[in-house]
Length: 149
Image (cartoon, rainbow, N blue to C red; front, side, top):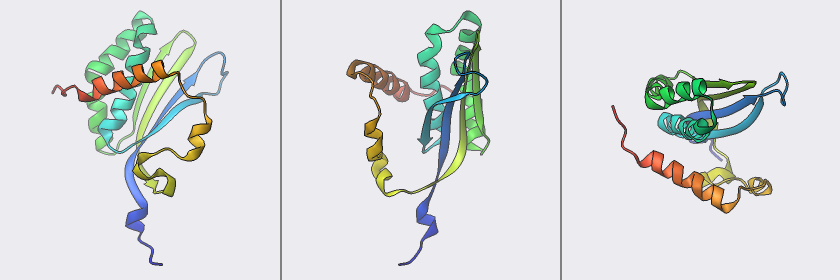
C-alpha cells in the first residue's frame, strides 16, 4: 500500500466557542466547535452565533456585537485568510463568551467523508425540529446575502 500524505491532510479552520460564568467557575467550558473549510465559513459560523445571542445582550455588549457583525468581521476574515487566528469576545455581567477560529490541518477520517457526522454524533440530544428549522433558516439567510465591500 502506497502512502500519499498529500491526500491525508486537508487545510481548513478550527473554530470554538468557550463560555465562562459563575456557574462554570474559573474554568471556561467548551460550548461548541466547528471545522470550516474556508476562512469565510469560519467567520460566518461566529457571525451566526453572535447574531443569535445579540437580542439578549445588554446595551454595551450588543453595541460591541453589532460593530463586529457590521464591519469588524471583515478585518478578522482577512487576517484569518492570511493565517492569523481570530478571537471575538463578548462579556456581560458575569458571563464571558469567546469564539476563536484558527488555521488548521485536518487528518482525513473515513467516517467524515462528504461532511457527514460520525455515527456517535447521533447519540447526543438533538434540538427540537422547530428550533433546528429556525437555526437553519437564519444560517441560510446569512450565507445567501451578498457581501458588502
